[in-house]
Length: 196
Image (cartoon, rainbow, N blue to C red; front, side, top):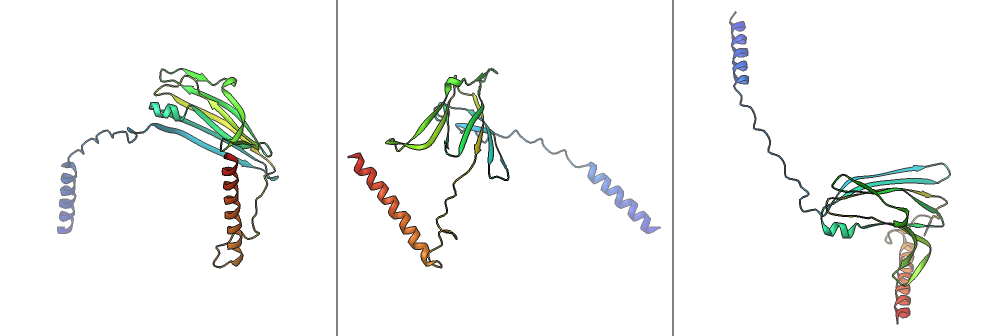
């Protein structure tokens, strides 16, 4: 009987204590952590499909909000580089979403496919740039792009069958690294000589 009375008293005490708890204060709205940002990437998705032949299809889709004039300058164009030997790039769509709610599609005349200049001196063979220029950009506008890149018959660069190596455990590794450094230095020297 005493045990039952103590359990009843304990249950009553817990009920009183739990009902006497104060209601927690409502959380204050958080400040935007992006207040100082020039732009905010709202969506960025890449999907890669690879088939048995080694051909891959990559669909890239992103949407970025431009908050400042600097963001407008830096994002007024989107540039995608690809190699004609094994890549094709198709722009599925490019749009500008204005703050007023209007959507402006980027026209075909604002999408250019040009050879890629190397160091501003010459064009790289088979390397191209797909350049999208966005119209009517203003603060608060959002740019949205989706494109498909198909890659086939990619050349595989294999310096050595087992890789370059660390040098310490692979005596031939240092020779390969030295050869790469010499080739880069030679290329830099040739570009300087041609500049004169």
